[in-house]
Image 1: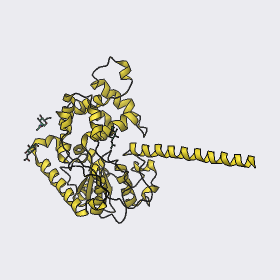
Image 2: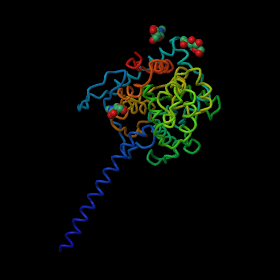
Image 3: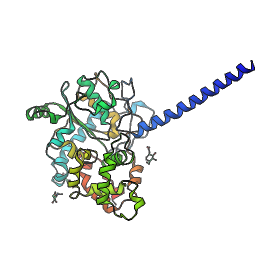
Image 4: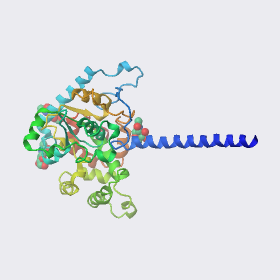
Length: 362
Ligand SMILES: *[C@@H]1O[C@H](CO)[C@@H](O)[C@H](O)[C@H]1NC(C)=O
Ligand SMILES: *[C@@H]1O[C@H](CO)[C@@H](O)[C@H](O)[C@H]1NC(C)=O
Ligand SMILES: *[C@@H]1O[C@H](CO)[C@@H](O)[C@H](O)[C@H]1NC(C)=O
């Protein structure tokens, strides 16, 4: 009897431990999912609806978090937001003060960024660090290679010869022109400086997808050219710093040759204008990462595919602009370097209605 009782308690204790470990592991996993944002891990199986939640956006004062769902913007309100953004984009494209920063040619580099869904007549320009992997999955499913988002293996998402999601650059000039003129076209942007921070963290600090060339080739090249002091050897061993990165990004002339050497990898930090040519290609919608909860369903509806697919569930808070984080990253960086960076990226700030980061510039 006593033995059985001991066994009973032992089992109970073991279960408790297993539970604790499971809770801990799930904490780590959900933390990782948030951190690897833009990467793999936030597909939540079985989610059909993306519920609109009010979120703060740089162009509108943050609405107070409210538990009354009736305060969520309606579809018509959102169409008005999308229309305002389109008007702004068009005005900035016409403004000659920004010509250098907003106009690019529709080069092979741009055509490489755009993915084609012929079945539903959709073009999607890929802009990293805004959850674009999720959009690719949505389009792969629409093209028919896989029955649903959950069944796409992670290694296939970026394999464009295997996943049935061709690049626009793989088509003939006539085919390209036809699609540019008639298809639904969209891409997603986010606050330009927060995007650069996200790219820096993802490629040079964490590198979760094991892409060794960022730390082994690109970082040393940037450090050689842009690190202020090379004397501090212990410093040099610690990899690329954000201030090296900022000086490199802000050096309009000097970085051109390096960027050619870096090849496609620069997609993580060249401007949205350079990636998608929004003044040359008349996009149907430019969504904002900060308001993805509203933009994702709006885009699916506008593209006529909302009955066929849904955007994977967006973890709460993940898309919100975090000024504290931006301040932290730029806190050790000279005004001169920040102003040069802004000069390089202000086309993106203006085109997409992001307020200039005066708290950093002045
Ligand atoms: C172009 O942009 C500048 C700087 O924001 C602004 O002062 C000017 O009024 C704009 N011009 C037009 C024609 O909108
Ligand atoms: C555009 O770029 C050229 C060459 O880089 C430069 O000389 C010119 O001042 C720039 N124009 C504006 C309006 O920034
Ligand atoms: C904003 O960023 C700071 C610094 O990285 C972090 O401590 C904080 O938790 C973030 N806030 C939110 C709401 O995510």
